[in-house]
Image (cartoon, rainbow, N blue to C red; front, side, top):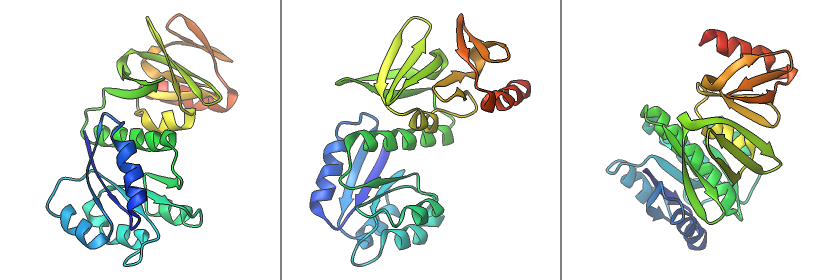
Length: 227
């Protein structure tokens, strides 16, 4: 589980985050705060992995609060109605930057990033959760052969099943461990262990032929040789 807190001076915004968090099986939103002082005290006494942090607050801005807690090494997802702070947010190494009104899909993508980061840090990322319609599906990383993108819909191909989920290929790349998966085309991610053959313009992954874009070829070869 990812233990999280949310800080926002607007109770309605906190209620939205609470509602969304209740839908994510690996996220535990343990507490919400309308100010930074109580949140800071909580961080020093409880285990918190992730902070949803509003930027525009009256007592202390979210960016200043993030700087003040940098030694605690907490993952931060900024939540704000303003685009002006995006660069500053990423300079502070924020995990993500959600614009209000926050859509559930974007919230879920950010949570998946937090989950993947935390599990990687713990050396325990062996699976991810994806949404298929109204259902949650656990996908074991060792069973993925390749992933195909069609606009905002991804098709995850395993040996004996295919799973579809509404997600961008960029967000999936941010979720997957980069030592196990690689992008080989604007529409394809493949598992490094599943590559059987490299040709000039294509790869053999399992028993399937995958296009290999020229812009990715050198990186693919370097990664496989290094393996």
